[in-house]
Each structure stands twice: as C-alpha cells, then as structure tokens.
Length: 462
Image (cartoon, rainbow, N blue to C red):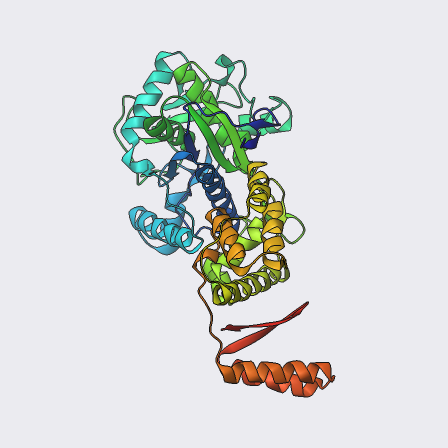
C-alpha cells in the first residue's frame, strides 16, 4: 500500500519512493539541551515517532538518526544572542557540561514516558566537531565561504536557489534587521559556519580548527552528522515548522554546496502547539509547560500522546486542560473497554481485513491519525465483532498509536464493587441522585472509579 506524505519542499502530497527498496533513511532535529523539553517540543517528537512507526507498520526498515544540540546554538536562530548552554549554566550555577548531561537525561526520560522509540543513532554535537570541520573545509574548497571578523561565513549569494524550502523573499524589513545584527556579513542572509570571535569573552566550549580556536555555528551540526550516518543523500528530514525559514534553509544551502546535488528527498514539518491567543509555546517567552507538570496534575503521559494523535500533525493545535481532560477520559474509557474484551476473549481468530485496511489507508494518507483513531473507536463500539476480533485489531493499531493498548490485561472487578455499581445504576434510573453520588464515593474509597457511558457504565481500578 502506498504511503503519501506532504513534502514541504514541493508543497504537495507525494507518494513516498525510498532511495533504497524497503529502507528509510530518516533524520530528526533533536533538542537543544539547556532546559527541559516543553510539551510543544514533544509534539514534534511524537510526530516523528508516529512517522517512524507508520514505516515499520508498512514493513520498512528504518535507519533513524537524531542529534542532540549541546553546543553552538545561540538564543537567536540568526547567529545572534547568547549561547543557550551558557545561558542555562548561568541560570542554574552549573557548568555547561553539567547542564548538557542533566537535560539530555531528562529529555530521554520524557521520550520513554511517551513511548517514543529510540533512534537507531543518537549523536551529540560535541562528539562530532571533527565531522563539522571537515564539512566546512569541503564547503570552503567549493568556493562558498568567506572570512570576516574572524568568523567563517557561508556566502548565500553563490547559491542561486537559496531559500527554496521556505520560498523566502530575500528583501524587505527582515533583510535590514539581519544586516544590522552582524556588520561582517556580505549579504543579510549569510550565516556563520565557524566562530573564532564572539561578543562574549571566555566562551566555555571551544575547539581547535584550521580557522582558529572557536566553536561551530548551529546549522552545520545537522548537516555534518546526518551525512556521517545516512550518507550524502537520504530520504526524509523532519522538524517543527519554526525550522523552515532559517535552520533547515541553511542546512540545505551548506549541504548542497558541499555535495553538489540534492540532499534530502522529503521534508516533513509539524505545526506549533499554541496556548492562549494563538501564542507559540516557547522557553524564551517563559510560557512553557513540561510533561512533568502534566504528570503532577494527574495526567498520564499517554493521555498527552492521545491528545496529540487527535489532531493532524500539520494542523496548529491549541492546548488547554479542558481538551486534555477529554483525552484523559477517552483513554480511561479505552482501557476499561479493552480490559472487558480481554475478560471475554477466548481462542484465536483471524483479523478483520476490511477494518485493518481502513486503518492502514488512514495512517498512510500523510499520517492521518484523527481518522485512524476514528477507526479504533469504530472497532471498540462495534456490535458485530467478537471481543477477540476487537483485540486483534487493537493490537495491530497500537503498533502505530503506541498508547499501551496492547498491554491491557483482563481487569477482574471484585463482586462487592460490582454490586455497588449495580445499586448506583438503579439509583440513577430512579433519579435518586444523592444516593447515586454516595455509591460513587463508596466505590472510589475502595480504589475504583465508575465511568458513565452512552450505553451503560464501566469500572476501572484507579
């Protein structure tokens, strides 16, 4: 079955054609580890994980590489501001190396909680400085660099199609602001490949290079490390839409200048998670929420994953606790219903091919997870499928959803709890609302909760 993906480069939905049959070479822009990942960041990684799982579901082998930015990323994407590692170190009174180690571990803990599959290769920028230097040398030998103010710059005027990913207009107010931000640039959209001089003295992370002791620009790390592990051309590069106008644009420019050919076949980008009046969640704005914040408020991390799957990755998603409550309630209902199927199931059964194909078509249509979730609920609510048929489908679907649905076991509710629930149901039928509330409280005190549903109720352990 064909997989169709929306390619940012062409602005079209295209049938995926791998460079090598049965193989997918996938690169994901990783986190800059100077603070906790916020739930907006994590949306991009759940998206990349879903993409990877869709390929695995379709029988592909996936070589997935993700970087960890632990050096050289300034607080402004346009080569200005303070280095983020040093900002974090100053904020917490630690060394930059302590900051890197702590927040890298925190990031991987969040990924584990969200059931995000680990990449085939995770590469830290500080361990690939030599690869970056070698790539800059290649770009330099091809005539795309100049040195000014002690730094090595990429000369965008030498690349006729610079800005093609974001379809940038290389003029206007943004051009003027970029000229003013760095007087050494020959062109406003030029960017630094290697810093040897910087406005802050005693920069903590520095290495020897042919151009002097210094540190790399942010953009070069992804180009150098992806080509190290995936080759000079690969299938897919992912990231958030904020990377399109600067970071990914500059990655393409330097990579294609180095290699002399197209670098990546498909570019996929996830939209923002926004709060309030459409405001992007951002560490720099101080308006971010972490996964631990949600956990401290009583939400399971998989409630958040379900919430994300309920919206298409290319649609802006407005975050609210009310919306997350809806996802939590849906997950509770799913767990309860699936535990009942497990209790009723016996023997083996062939999977329902029609519904499996409907799910398959949904996820292969540019990762249409809202439609795929609708197929899941169609299975759960079906009165034509046996419990075992439902479980077989749910287990297949969860290979992509990763909501832990395939791990739900039979839930045996004690007889005394079931009796309280039956009494409560009778009280509700007789409109004895106070009595019904008392029975709900009694059930809760015994460690269970009752969930009212359209066609009755379900009981689950708290």
